[in-house]
Image (cartoon, rainbow, N blue to C red; front, side):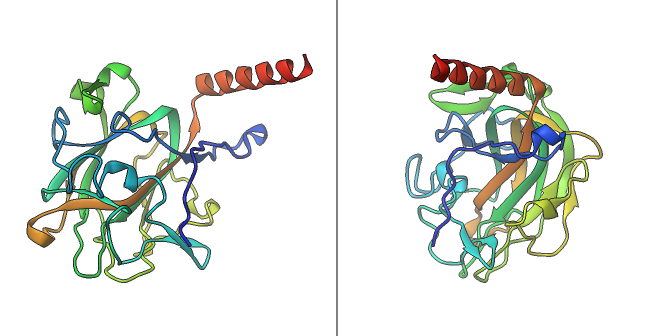
Length: 253
């Protein structure tokens, strides 16, 4: 049975002062997640099957490629249509608007695996920004506006190529040495969790730059799924609290 996630970003245990957050779900359009040219991110990249087709970006973060097996989220090695996304190049960039500013806990990547071939990623750069002027939306698509506003957290991070077999667990990347075992439905396929950065990583915009595919099918780069977990910044929490108070007052009224 497919496990499809609704928009969340629900925060667990904030009253106890914990730094653990919930699943972050970007908005379901190219204005939130878009394949872009590597290096600059200033233009959209060619998506397999075209925008709005069976490999559209939405399929990388709507849960359509995930199945819960033995209590862990996995991808199969079956058909890739409507469950994954990729570009028609062996190198790509993925630009993501998380919808708010978060202190990141964890990133999970499920690389494109199909049984008859896979295409990465095997390496990537990880860049973040909080300034809205770092990006722009042109023709409904999210693009980098000013690359200098992005901070490079990791350059040329190695990634294990996805398994060809069903039950692929994906790869786990933590921030600030977050304890990944607290998110019990995630596993790591190669058994090695990488920590990205030695301190707090705060982001509204994430640029997975220079994603390097393995070159199958003439050169492709893609993901079955990605997930981010994090805690909203204090300003965002204050707005959430005010919103909750307003709802309570209306109910009491």
